[in-house]
Image (cartoon, rainbow, N blue to C red; front, side):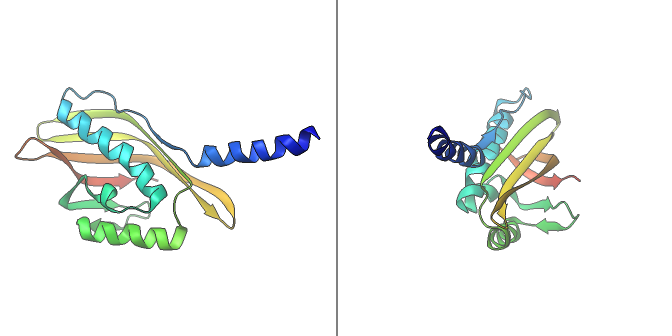
Length: 156
């Protein structure tokens, strides 16, 4: 009888683990606007991946920003990056869970380098499958003082 009660509870707990979107706050860079931009982009990315929302993903990019996928292919510009994610959602479905952990942020003039670890869990053949690894994001300070993504690289 106990196992009949515990099995659904365990299944629910397992689903909640994969339904999570974890975004660790970035380490302080010394530039409050940059820190806010990174925190916003990272915290919006997970829920957007789980909800199939494109705008929160591309909002942080410069108009001619570049996303470099793990296979080395480069996608240039917000519209192309949006199309890439639409295709990704069609192919892989929505994310069951995400994690992003910025590890370091360095500011060098009007550029900033953020690197860390990220992962996405999707359903593959009805089972959760997680892929992840290191990333490097290059941010550029805009004329108005805001920061936008110039390059976002998924590293092997």
